[in-house]
Image (cartoon, rainbow over all chains, first blue to last red; front, side):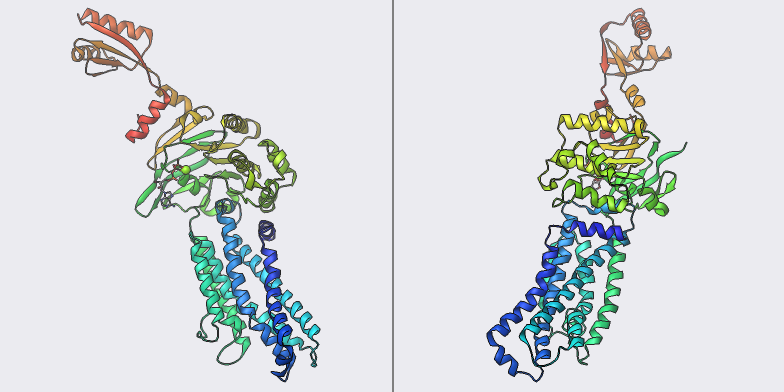
Length: 235
Length: 303
Ligand SMILES: Nc1ncnc2c1ncn2[C@@H]1O[C@H](COP(=O)(O)OP(=O)(O)OP(=O)(O)O)[C@@H](O)[C@H]1O
Ligand SMILES: [Mg+2]
């Protein structure tokens, strides 16, 4: 499994995966740099707690970046294997198909996790730079950086499944685009839709529910996708 | 007899279309097994099943005496393969492509240099595969198949895209493998001439069915000569020769001898002359392997 992952990381070389891993969190924070750069005084008047208000502004775009990143990563990953039908070579190696699938999932989950760490660092950095009056709300910072990640795992599992088993790469791209649209419309779509979860919104106003749902349903979708992948013939 | 590859009644269909039907393939250790058949005969489908890429609809596969269903990993660790077009990652160099595989199969790094040398890609090993010619990509595919020092090498149309000197080179390489490394080779092709130049055993498949499987010599004797004789009363001549216990056939004005030894021809002519038949022509007909292959695959049955 370790060697399989080393191979998977080798394969994404020069394909822009690492660039996107950095770009996502930079983009999210950069939007707030613009926002605060243009109208800092106004924004500071909006709330009692400037740090929390700033974190909420950041979080407005995190889900979008996550869902978009997942769509791009999964279809890039599939296109690398599809380009010369490398699946047939991969599956003819003495490894189980489950290992192949798990390795892909783990790699993408790692990249997104790194993105989340970077998001936390950049958020912290710019927050410190803005020098709010309050103390740094560490717990909230960690929550806002990593809760959306866990809540987005079902989307990752679903997109990975669709991307690996589709012969036509138009399908995962289409579902990816719809995912991004749903994530953008998080405030109006129903609670049961997985694309809403990274926004941490729900009717009970308890973000932890989204995290737990994300982990649970993420595992479920992962297992279903993996079983379907192992069942299929490789052409 | 212990076979390296043995399939029993192997079948596979795609929807209603039958791709492989009741195929029994037997490959002995040290064989270069030529798997021959026209386009769409089911060669690649059979190979995919041998490699566990596809599950057979029915029938069984034993490789190294083990059932692929239970021992897939174990078997694949000792098999090298190249199916249809070579698979590679164009954005990586040849070396990186091999390294990606090497990590998974866990052979020492020096093995990469060995296989690259074997297929003569050493000079371009650090270049991205994107820029490779078709032949270079094909060589890389073969290098990949050799990386794990396989005991069984399965090559599906390995000569694709190679120029004449490349073909000779790969053919010589394949011929060396059984002697030097004890590797058993399964090589598919739709060209008999290619198989004829390297195979020790031939399996011919058409429309999913194995219609011939024997040594290349056995196939060559099928291509033996026949003598045909044109006479004024072919039917009468035919009866006469049959009555003498000879193997003959007749068609229009011609009778055909299956045996073509000098004595046989002399004896036949003598009998015909004695019976007052007029002999117009005595001709030798050679059937090439190609003819046999064509007639076999056309009629869909053994010759
Ligand atoms: N994935 C698939 N879906 C539907 N039909 C298929 C599929 N793969 C193969 N077939 C059909 O099965 C038959 C056998 O195909 P196969 O690729 O095994 O032939 P082949 O002997 O390798 O031919 P070629 O010399 O052209 O490579 C063909 O009629 C083909 O159309
Ligand atoms: Mg084929």
